Length: 420
Ligand SMILES: NC(=O)c1ccc[n+]([C@@H]2O[C@H](COP(=O)([O-])OP(=O)(O)OC[C@H]3O[C@@H](n4cnc5c(N)ncnc54)[C@H](OP(=O)(O)O)[C@@H]3O)[C@@H](O)[C@H]2O)c1
Figure 1 (cartoon, rainbow, N blue to C red):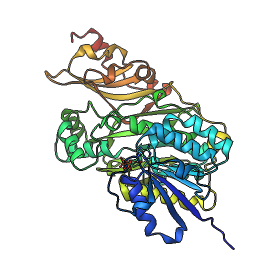
Figure 2: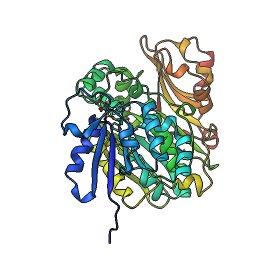
Figure 3: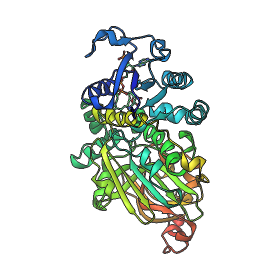
Figure 4: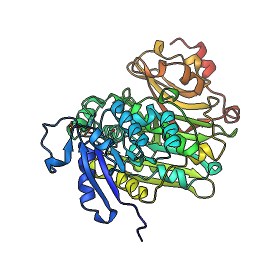
């Protein structure tokens, strides 16, 4: 009796991830999965696989009735969306690693999965080798997931690690990341936080049933973090990480954002160095759990795709339990964030918008303030990411109205009368 179905794969893309998957599958014959055809863009490139395997005609894969699984690992989000949706319409299961495409088209992809009843799996799209999506989907009950904090972008984590461990400035660390292949030639998506925010959108769905566009999230990257911020962090006993965060508030809604954060040395995320990723889940009764692994690279990413393929042998589908079987959570704007903000000129930072300020340094070069801002202030204004203003969230930085009311009086009144 055959218990697991034979997987005949049409592979789109033979770059870092596609070639990695090809090699990994050669070493895992027990999976019962074979690549029948590979669709690439440039027919003239030399490939480390038999020429007969390759085509530039997508229909040779999408219209082949023998191919029952499409693995999509290309670097063009628009083409990826068209491939993925056509494949599902043609009754093929799909595995994808394209986080940008998934974030941009999430709602349509949900509809497509329901309409076609096809599996669409994408474990590799967030955290690469870390099995986080299926864990959020299967393991954590809706009511018990208190918070998720994650480093989900390897390039920015590599740059921040080098700024800390080797005292490189941002530009030098970015150059090193490029030289070692950890940053793209156009690093904007990574360093300005788009990549982490893209991943956070669908992790929020699997964790809390929240559907949001990337543009609906408050986020930034590490582009304004300076060597001076790193020095201040060190003085205060912190490291700086780009952290995607979600925390359930007392009203049941969820506070979520992707922002640079001061991280204490005993925080699990401070253990995540270089190109590695990590996720800390806090849930009722089990307390903190920490997932750690390589967040990019050929074999680590291929390993997550392999795991999805393995799940397809028994027709696994995401059920989107938190979305369809529970009352989905909503994002909240109604909370406060404890922040450090550094800047060149007082005119770029509206200190009067702070709810409290506990520290203010008026150095001749870089100045900084530590205080509390309402989340609405971050949502509705952009001053905190313009003119080289650098905003970093403090540890345990999410506060509610009830937390604010018990705070010590601050120097705000003094600031209001101060000549800046
Ligand atoms: N690299 C990682 O560590 C990593 C980790 C997680 C997720 N991902 C995601 O995985 C995907 C692939 O990344 P990658 O690093 O493997 O990219 P890559 O090395 O740049 O390779 C991209 C591949 O896509 C092919 N391609 C582009 N447009 C195509 C089209 N319209 N039809 C068919 N093939 C097309 C290219 O063909 P040619 O070879 O002919 O140019 C190339 O083989 C991306 O969505 C990325 O975000 C990557």
